Length: 193
Image (cartoon, rainbow, N blue to C red; front, side, top):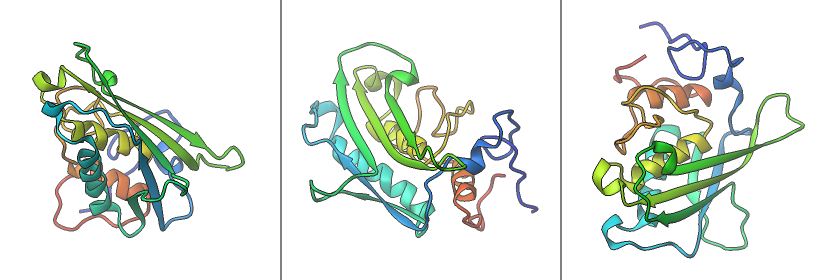
């Protein structure tokens, strides 16, 4: 099968954004990206452990990006983090995907391309997650996808969709796109683009 043609923000799509897929990424790879989860995590027993959910999400991205990028949790409070993750809870009955998380990327202003230099992620736990089937892990996987340079996506099967419910799984399209962004070969035997 010939390689996918990359035109826009996601494999197999066209876009007028000027090649976002090729330019928004972490520079100087291979590298370890250190993430720090806030210390004062909220705890709602019916959501499970948010720290464990974020760790599982990081491991899913590591499985497709190592050794070029590796997400590693900060264990020393004095070490600077590339990605700061905040977990909040809210007793709100909202249904939109945007209510579940937010990611803010800071870029190097001296870079000719948009090299990411720092990311802040917010993972929210809303009561509606109990009813719409979106887990904290799925929200963390989505927000870490943004932290790696992925934009939102309209396909409802993608982890990068803003639609809920969303499964805590990466599709072959999600994997192919992020691997292309960081110059990794396609995973053999996988279906998709």
